[in-house]
Amino acid sequence: MTSGLWELVLKGIWTTVQLLVLSAALATAVSFTVGIARTHRLWIVRFLAGFYTEVFRGTSALIMIFWVFFVLPLAFGWQLVPLWAGTLALGLTYGAYGAEIVRGALNSVDPAQREGGIALSFTPWQRMRKILLPQAVPEMIPPFSNLLVELLKGTALVSVMGMGDLAFSGNLVRLALQESAQIYTYILLIYFVIAFLLTRLMRGLENRLKAGVGKAPEPAVSVRRSETTTVGGGVS
Amino acid sequence: MKWDWGAVRDFLPHFWDGLLVTLQALVLGSLIAFVLGLVWALLMRTPTRWVRWPVGVVTEFIRDTPLLVQLFFLFYVLPEWGLAFSALTTGVVAIGLHYSTYTMQVYRAGIEAVPAGQWEAATALSLPMRRTWTAVILPQAIRRVVPALGNYVISMLKDTPMLMAITVLDMLGEARLFSQQHFQFTEPLTVIGVAFVLISYPASLLLRALERRLVR
Image (cartoon, each protein chain N blue to C red):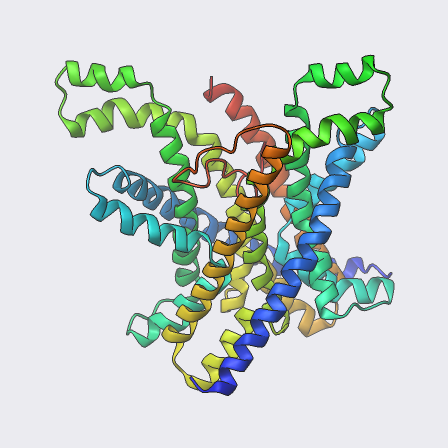
């Protein structure tokens, strides 16, 4: 491969990383907003949040991307820059999966903790911020780590829309060189390395957060995904 | 926002064609994923690390890399090696292979959840290894993991639109073709989006009911 083609791949990596960071940020915001809304005391708030998660988990990420790229401009008359359109579609879809993680972790906090908060006459928001979230967040990290890898895999979908991410640069180089096996092996390896780095990062974050609430970090397990029900599994 | 029911009506015949292809891909892909996942899970239990280690690395690699790029890999590389399949076959193989690395984890969890007493009883009855697996362990393990496998069928359904990228005319492929021919994007894309929700939500409710019955 010539240096010009490598430059293309590097640009692709940069686009993928940008898209990953932006959509992960949006997905996190959506997860916490919707996940916390699902534990709200008003049924209408719970219902709307539940409706959101079911709709966005029910449909496919690629269809969301098509919808944001093609239908949104026609329907509302404003067109997004490809990077933001991709961020919106991926963030909303994976945010719906994340919302289930947040809800599950909040529900798994010992009920006595919440009751303790009520007894101390904390407001609901104080209870959430000072009691529930600090204990729930460390539990969310392993499933979020899996979801982040799924999101990384999801970012490849924008290449279908002609956005110059890593997968797209792979297609371009294939057209230039006609050596599919070599090129796609490189591309897959790069994705794998990024995924590996992400899981390491999340493992470190988990240890720090667990230390913060006085829990010993769990011994490193050989098989990472004991709970594979995030994106894979719809039901939880 | 204009909504044209006429376009929906024109799209419907294409929609049914696409749905058929999607379901074909889903059923065949699931079969591959179920069988291959079990093979991976059993290989991971062999005593020698010379089998476990490569299987572990390969499945981890497949699981952590995008299905879309794997599709491109199979679609463009296999013909170079002299193996030419139709686009749908390639897609089915890719999706089945990708999801077998997930179902493998499910089987592993199911096998580990079989109580140790069952193994000991099989040893006490001096059942041969083969019979221990087929008559004692797997029937109990698989019963437990059916709902989890079902979850992966649902998420496989949501990944089938990717086959469009390798020219398969599944639901999304049909929708895109129709939009490009008629310059009507809103209706076909919305119709298939709603169709996915209408299929996957009841399916997940069904699985929840199944889970209550099977896993106790």
